[in-house]
Image 1: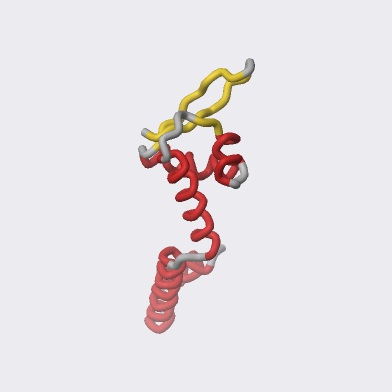
Image 2: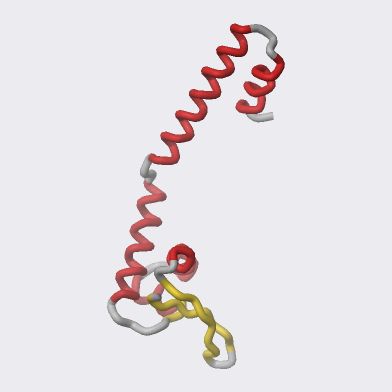
Length: 113
């Protein structure tokens, strides 16, 4: 049982007005803490944003569709970091994702939309 569920159980039980009021206050405090955490720029979020920007700037430089390994080599990132950044841009419609056959293997390539 989470803290929020515990407070909700107290609210629904209507044990007393004092307990119900306090449970509402504590639930509101949890909501405020979560909202602050969501909007705060953490170190990890900044690193992810920097990686995404590096990939976007590289692909904007006029190159054609490239595999994640080629992008990683050019930007100094790992292939998994490139995949993460490109996947986010594909969801946003900024990049396109397709598959091509390279040396008898099917590889995913990314390009600007």
